[in-house]
Length: 449
Ligand code: ADP
Ligand code: ASP
Ligand code: MG
Image (tube, rainbow, N blue to C red):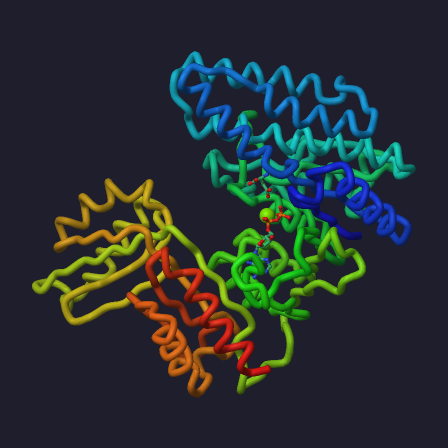
């Protein structure tokens, strides 16, 4: 059994939807499949914009509804296919307008409609093209989550619920009908809609794949797999044929948007290969992500460069306490309690510098940190990571990194590397991030070739 996930661009216009349906038909001919789809491209952004406008008193679902209906029109499908969802969306926006502010819970509810429209359209087109399909909202087939709106996590029994609902071959609901399931969303046990976070459909696909113990999880997107850098930043980026789970997880964590950072965890748990493929080039080999990955190349361990923008650097200076026992524990306890993930840490005799990517949660934490030492906050930074198993042990890599960045006149504000590590990461100013990625890509990949 295979889980086949299509991202926003792959279900964003009629030509792409046909291409995606052909891909599903081809897979279906070879064995059972479960399809996971995202919202059509831009729809989630449009929904969140509508939700914010509603909070300011303007209720207008029409841009989204128009986009969704135009996709139905392209296939001569009736608008009634999504009418219930359109009404529910209008109602949700009206509720937000009445409340006068946008809670995380309401934002999730509004955002959920993108995927809910998408499954209905996709299943109808698939059926019309001869592959009988049924649309499902993920929460109706077992995706029950906690109540962390905007970053919900499935409850521990959700995998069993999914297995019950869809069966190990994905056809428990109806023999001979392909299940087309929403990515990105779930529901709490008491029935409130949640999302797994932006870009979360990849994570959904992996969760469904793990729950059903799929043979493979396929992520169909708009590029030829996981590449040596974001091809929008580095034109010369190349597809990486094989990656290990560890490398893929590091890359996703450090900003390679092609995979949501949580995607790899469920695949690791059940040891399921993840393949990243291009809907625009279905014959391409793409990237396969396996537990072991490719054999290590001790001389050239770097596999890719990723960057994560708009992070914040926090420096705590405390000449009195830094070397005292328990100082770091005290510091990290503050971040843990405020649920702020810390990415990178560097210490000196009197200071600790670290990076976080949730500055929306930072203010209350900063007030507590100020009791520990002098606190300085520097926003608008980027994390740049060179990823590859064995990178921390490669001779000469640091020298190449430093001279490449010096040549590009990029100042390194923080650095973290070490033996046994699968990444070397640096902090630079946001404005320097793309130049840093390009310079490193050139120094590490082009000069090697
Ligand atoms: P989808 O809608 O299919 O989920 P996304 O836009 O979320 O697609 O992810 C695909 C995009 O990720 C690509 O268009 C590319 O610009 C970006 N990307 C960033 N880093 C990488 C990388 N290392 N390899 C491939 N794509 C990357
Ligand atoms: N539609 C959601 C988003 O835009 C989830 C996804 O595309 O993976 O964030
Ligand atoms: Mg994505």
